[in-house]
Length: 191
Image (cartoon, rainbow, N blue to C red; front, side):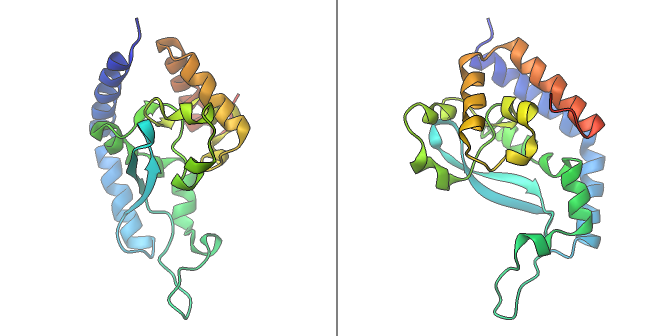
């Protein structure tokens, strides 16, 4: 039987192996961001609600510059996305540091993507069920409707998340993993 303990075991095992496998690539990405990203630091952190709505810091590679206007305010996101950042996002390389979140227990490899905390008060009791499990780096909503909706709280996305929680199984996790790999390798194919 596939339970949350077994799921956590697979998360840790896979995250450690992937981190070891891609560590030279992660170091190279960090060097490129520092050299060409026009930014201070290589990581972007943001608060997101996790299991039981407990807030944690999600870790991603920085894809935006630190450019500010004359009053010292950060420019709008569309002006700060660097060329190297655009590539890093389009290839989902920016998501790789979230493997650290998986090892820390904040996230799972597969589960509902963590949205922004501002959406928490908007959930009804049914929608709040998406916080019964750890959020994932990838999930059913992403492989069914695409990754462009990661920060969206749309009812369709939540419906996919609730379907995942209701039907949580090893087979469903493997289906999501295979679809995610296909999307990463081909650049498309969310269905």
